[in-house]
Length: 257
Image 1 (spheres, one colour):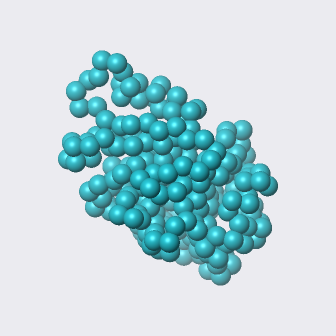
Image 2: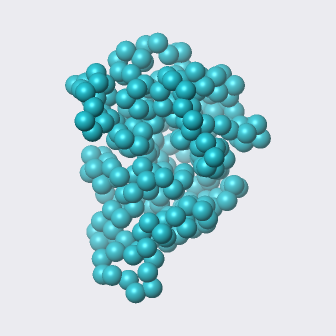
C-alpha cells in the first residue's frame, strides 16, 4: 500500500478502561488526559475509506469525540465484550447515511456476534436494528474496500485472536504469544501497535518485559503500546523510561505513514 495511512487511537485501555470504577489509585485519579483510556480500538483512514478495528462499549463516545460522520467497515480481532459490545451503534450510520455497514470476522467470532446480538440476525427483524453485512475472514489476505488486510494469528491465552497488517503497519491487541511463522508477517515494520497490559505477569496479555522482548525480536522502526490497564502506571512517568522507538499511545493520538 503506497497511499498515506492515518491511524487514530480511539481507545487505548483494557477491558475496564481507565479510570476503573471505584478505584482510587494515582492513575485512575490522574488529571492528565493521557491517563484517561477508553476500551481499545483504532480507526484506519486510507484511499478515502475509514476502517474501524473493534467496536467496544465506548464506540459511540469514540465516534462522537473524533467527529466521525462515516465509516466503511469494522474488522474484529476477537469476540470479547470490550471489543464488540458497541456493534449496535452502527445503526446511527445506517440511519444517517442510508447504507449498510460491512463487518469482517472469522467464523467463531461471527457465531458469537449472532448469539450476543441475536436481534440483528433474527429472521423477523425489529424496526431500527443495525443493518450489517457479514464477511468471513480466515488466516489469509483479504480486501476491505480495495485495501489489502493481512491477518496475523496470535493467542490470547487459549483463545485464538487476529491482529491485522495494512501496508507497513500492524495492529496487535490482546496478544500473549505469536507463533514463529506468524511473526514473519510483521518483522521490520514501520509501525507496530502492540498490547502491553502492565508490568506484572498476566495469563493472557503481554506484560512490559514480554512486549519489549517481542519488539526487539520483530525490529519495527516505531512502536506504540496500547490496551493498558491502570496498573501499567502514569503516562508521564512511564513514557520516559521506554526505549527511544517505543511510545505509549493515548486516546485521540493520530499517527501517519
